[in-house]
Image (cartoon, rainbow, N blue to C red; front, side, top):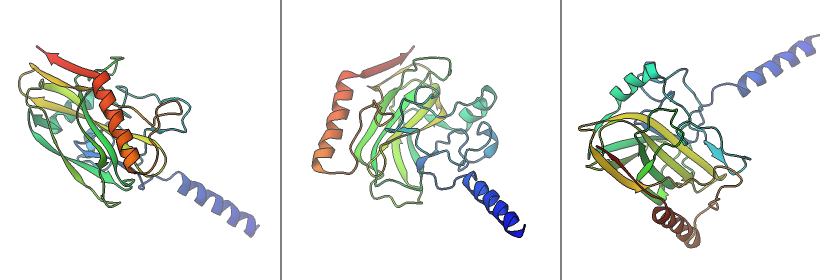
Length: 244
């Protein structure tokens, strides 16, 4: 009887550990603060319960199809009630340099980053117009120590439209499984609504079995492959968003 009780207790303990909130997340943005990220303050406007595994990959090349996402690339959508608070917390000016911050429990030896903006804040819009205005190819987060909080300066273009927007960071890792990461933050850009932002549509790779797969590791050949992918995306998928 004692053995049976001990066995049951052990199983229950194991199950509890298995479903406990994960603090060993991979990597994600924590400033500008995204919805439901427990690393952000204050907690009251994060949009529901904190997700302690917020920075797990959005998807990977083992997936049979892309996951269902908000705004095409976002894990969470901010509720209408909390959106008002969120856009008041993350306020920036046109041309401002944002010292973006990341929680790098596992930086995967770096990779490639893209930063994009969309003004299509309403989640009902089926085809939001994302504009990538900055990227770092191959060397993003390179040399960053695991369990650190690195920062990267990201300058907003001067002539962009003002108003509510979503700011996205997209990351494809060098080391480990072929994964796709993204963090979306709701922001306000101060100033006149009039303006133009130019760039290219996000390069989406490593998101499922059918998507293009960037090989693991780094070499001169792989660096050139990534550079060619970005060059092709910029050439074939430019995008301009103008507000009047």
